[in-house]
Length: 178
Image (cartoon, rainbow, N blue to C red; front, side, top):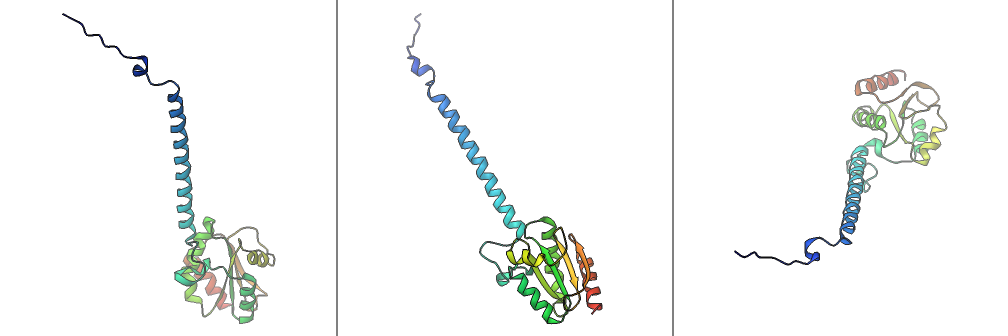
């Protein structure tokens, strides 16, 4: 009986010791990059969904909500004062969770009051929003001010999000005080 002896070189028996660590480093770098990209994509998707505003559509065109319109808040407030109607001023941001909640309620409720109450949308991220905020006393957003015609008298104010029933109650009281 004869034995077969195979002769293999040491190179064929074990992987090159110099390339194994390089492959491990490359694998780790690729994994880190993939995880980072995953976080970036997730953040972009969540931010776009939270604000409800795409970067290509600002303003009322294309079905944007009234609370996402970026107007000159100071000019809008001056026009509201001149209208002789009660005024609802909402100081908010497009990103904070309670702000997003109250914005959805405003978008739902205000169309029913557009003939009776002037809505002033104040986005605090905008310079005109910060300028108008200096004329009001409050610390947190969202804050709602319900003003008598002429804007001189604050009938009521509320800080935080509210539901549609509460908002209608504030607006009904505002129109009744007229």
